[in-house]
Image (cartoon, rainbow over all chains, first blue to last red; front, top):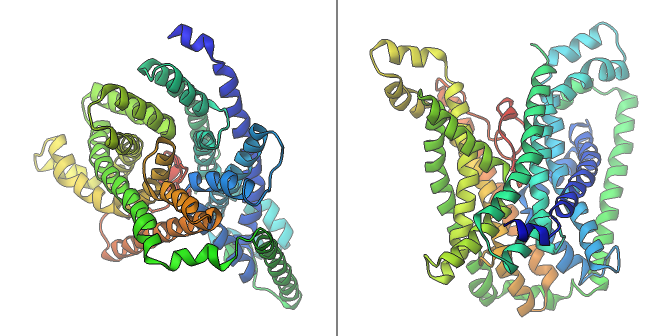
Length: 220
Length: 302
């Protein structure tokens, strides 16, 4: 067991997982916020665009998007980011993970807005706050607090979903595990090492987000 | 109350003008993106009739797509049934009055929710090949079903637990006061109500299972994605094949979501003691849990 792990760079593989997670989380947050703005806007066409985005991305398996990005878009349509196959796969993985999880980020933000009782908006207007003031002083702070828990779930899901990047040849943790299992043996200890790696990455985050969401919960 | 009603006032003349401008901008951007995509597809010859005609023939469906849908359906149905049973078991374990049963169930649930399904699949597939318990050709299916069962069973266990916790306290108190033991109360009073309330969330979990079954592609399980890839090679239409596969997945999952919502509304009308857990509750991981309901604080999304 020890000698198997000595032969492979476990930390480098988990570092790729962390890189994928951080970059995709940022991407998903940016795209997801834009989609959420569309979905909660008072403009029907923008709402339709936001809803369609969420319905399409959320109902497609991530694996399909991943495989199609490389075998379809990159190889056949010739849209690649780098001549190096590894770099190209990595960039595509970040893009696909960002776009996919943006749908969930959007829903998380929207559910935060939905936790606000209408009375809050009415009260803000009735004491004479302008649109901008009621948004920044009353509504968005509450919406943000309400969406912490689902955003946390989305981030944890994203970290676990980075493993799907292994399907297109990114050398993340799942990719390395597939290689070890192929070359050496798929023994229980190998699985345990990788499983514990992900437990370490996700479990503290989950506890922290639950704690945060309870501490910041709007008392009603 | 919809988000729009909370965030925005009824529009006046100026706001209506702004909305019109935003509408035009939105339409222009989307039309531009669509045009760019279609142009790209067109210049690479992906819109040629020859690439799309195969989908109108019976043989493409009989020999590829239906085979793939069958593979996905078998894996999803087996997984969801087994996951339901496992989830019920673990959920009862987490609510048990014996401390060590609670602790063991809790550890099992947290572990399998934290480990990515793909990692489990790769390990199980390899282990099954070495152990030779089954015929070689069923190993991929076994690995997919076991991995999905372990993950989704853990998620369902949390659903069971939150379902029971969401019941009014009077239900358990009434059971105890007529002389039932705590476990009898759980079995004959709390669980039946919790399971009905969970139904929409369970159907929502099926969406997660269907999506995650596509991970079987990596361990050579013949599901819809694998068959679409084969179809793409056979007819030399890889890109259209993926588009059709994605459309089929979207259609299946969207219908399931609609069905879950319909069940949820029926349950709400029936005015059971427990409000149905929202479908939005559990689903993120492959993330598929749709974030949303108040219950999802504890439930991660795949």
